[in-house]
Length: 494
Ligand SMILES: Cc1cc2nc3c(=O)[nH]c(=O)nc-3n(C[C@H](O)[C@H](O)[C@H](O)COP(=O)(O)OP(=O)(O)OC[C@H]3O[C@@H](n4cnc5c(N)ncnc54)[C@H](O)[C@@H]3O)c2cc1C
Image 1 (cartoon, rainbow, N blue to C red):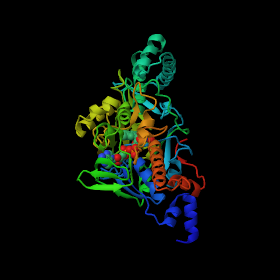
Image 2: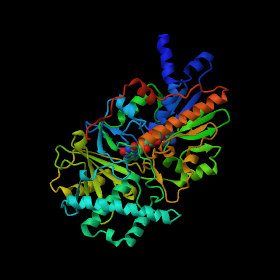
Image 3: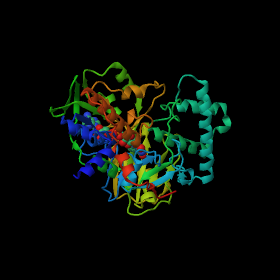
Image 4: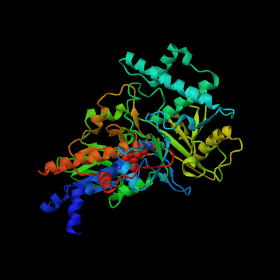
């Protein structure tokens, strides 16, 4: 490398690379557990800072809860598919921009509830009649009023309660907000959509915190080419060992030993754990010494929801050109909806989405039975619907690599739960979506949590070696930001 290039690379990186090279000290070693976006982001930061990093991943693929499937001949995300916050502040924006990926904006709203604009829905009743759009809009506005009233309930009650309980208090106080007949079913559909955001039923969602998330601006954008390219790009050149399921972590004063399923041990100066919260809750990894009580309590005090997707590919499009097709019902459990990927991507694919208890119930059925059930829903709307030529069914709730889809705040969650989850233990650091500072349950939150874990791990190891970090490393994304001129994110629907 031309010395000039080396200088500018170090300058751009702002890393300790040159420092390590000058002193000829072997670079500190770190094992990252989990090759989801958080683990890969952590590994990328460490790799860019010339640390010796190895990622151990239990699955035979990268990405974790990012899983872009290509078997339909087009990308279909069976895990995350939206970028929540289509704006420059989104830490993933520089990467997405740099890769030239397109976003399809389903909503410009920054709230957690409306990741689709109201006018992009077409809803049907159980007997196959289209719900007049005026009712859809009016009930949507009523739902917003009900939620605004739950804010008053929250102010009056020092103790937390579920969102469902608060809605019931509001409806008792304001009978005029109660809906009857079809309008009641549409209201249930909105509750079903709210449950989808948290991947949990409304009787499990915390009233105190449900709307406290600081959602990034710019609305919600579907990744038209899927999230897969983001993972591929971040993982480039990193030593990632697939089919390495970690069963034990022994945290010593100087080193950490990691045991994998086949009995092999790997040793490093530090370890970053990014496995899903569901895995920690199920005690699938043994910690030696045992995790302290405050950490165990934090793991159990946060909820993990479930969401499943059933993707159907057809040989032709027989549905209208809207983003969401929904079936309303007397309870939110019985409501359903399909994301129309054809509108965003041009491929004849519908994705049925189920959340909360319903998502777990679907996992008790065979894939064939699930598809049959979903087709019955579709045929309520379109009696002449064609049979799918291909299908995909996710099982996030029972997948032993995840055990749930993402974290959410349980009723009565202690305020410091995230601080405790994130807190390192000696040479052991914690990443993953559940420890994100402000954006739990999202891809960008998981990414930032991985970068943060890597930064505190670096600081810790350099301090132990009696060295200072001359400057915090700039992660790949920020470097891209400096290298790329500010090209706007490509959005296919304004
Ligand atoms: C259905 C669904 C829809 C979603 N939709 C969106 C969305 O639209 N937008 C959005 O921003 N977010 C969405 N999310 C959330 C988002 O996908 C996650 O927040 C994020 O991908 C989590 O990344 P992570 O690295 O923290 O965890 P993961 O991606 O789960 O990575 C952890 C890794 O650890 C591995 N692992 C587990 N156990 C072990 C072990 N013992 N040893 C070694 N490795 C192990 C796992 O296999 C996995 O690869 C969705 C999630 C799901 C499931």
